[in-house]
Image 1: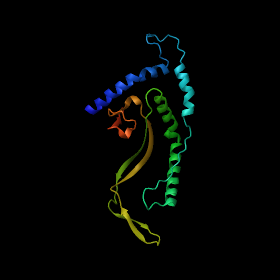
Image 2 (image 1 turned 135 degrees about the horizontal axis):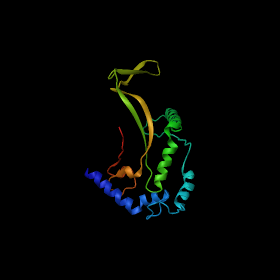
Image 3 (image 1 turned 180 degrees about the vertical axis):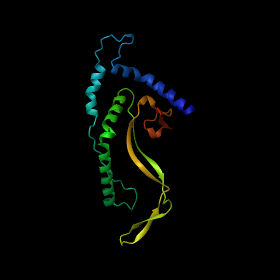
Image 4 (image 1 turned 180 degrees about the horizontal axis):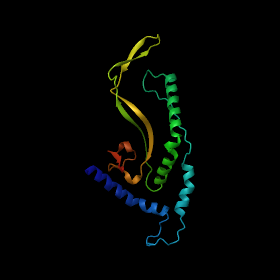
Length: 197
């Protein structure tokens, strides 16, 4: 709890210094502080400026390229190239599915980055079921057509696998109190989420 409080304090200090919420209010047209009835006329140049920039920052139909990277002496460029092509095709087919809402999620994060910072989580989720063949060996045919033991069956198998993309509003994201530029150099990162059951 002390670490979370430290992250909250760090965030509040940063947000106050750069007036993040105030800038967001300006974008939404709430630029008059003493206008309880919301009757003041607003010529919103904040929104129009950002709306002009957004199309150049978005990619409605992104294409990903995957290339193999040698990691050991046994690196086979032909096999690695084929696997990289399979992964590339899979990613591109998933990202461009309508239900993924990839472009819309990225647009929300890009809009956040105008006032705070943009944050998107891409992840994998599955339901894990007990494997009835857990621990049993499985085999693969070698070049001569002779079965060779490849490994052992895992204790659990995935079902209902899915890849997701999720926009995380900057106000819900916290880092350990550290001025590191890269997330991997901070002591911890996390976000809080609200779910209604």
